[in-house]
Image 1 (spheres, one colour):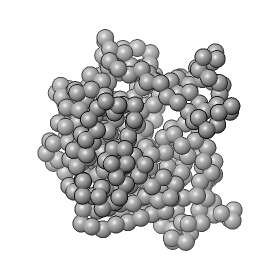
Image 2: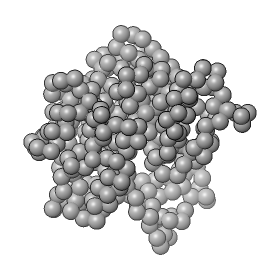
Image 3: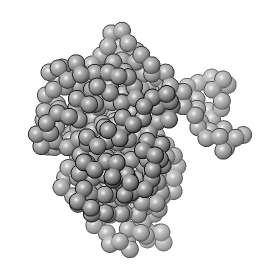
Image 4: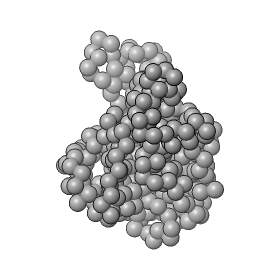
Length: 335
């Protein structure tokens, strides 16, 4: 079975049970959140032997994260438990009905977290080195680069080591709060070291100063493929050889957008690992994202293997007619 390793921080996530301002909340729901672990769970659901490498605190939040990942079929043998530093935490405050245009807000409590101490010494951990050596895919993101100098050094080490047949993917995952006062140009340098780069068109303006495809490819000439996620419109792959593929997004009755980008990454990357072409891999990403967009939470269940194969093999007209609602893939006529 093909193996994938995702490296990055996952935090405990607290959310008011009722859609009220934080200062009025009497109950907080505890979950977990992390881009790379979301991708790991998505890859595991896609049938890959998937592992998450990181650090957590020796606390209940850390245990919660490990338990949930294992419950989703993700290996955690490469996770170090820090006896002193805590597990990172963030509080997600939902949008208020009284201010619907205000949107949701996020408060981070991750400075000095166990994961922020990830660095090159992590690669000396025998469990971690074994996982990385046997991986067909190593998935990283720009979030890790912003956490600490040690985390940035870890990414640089992972991305400059000999590939030995492995693919290194890098999802930019722009987070404005993390890059305040920091040199964001490191994102371009890191992205250019990857084999596969994923970036939202909206993120590209912040991270690279442009949304122009040709300019983005000029800024990152070395990756095998650059994938641009154009929100609800389409996804575009730009091959190093100059080949361009664009696949329109599916029509979706969106419930919540959280986690859709990570699901897209899992779908697309699994397609590449299974030897699919760019069009099929992009479609696979759209399907996974659609499943997540139609549920509350960071992940939605995938269609059965047979239904997924039929969706991926559909004609362009049939693809355009698909509408996804509550996890069900139907034509827009309801047939």
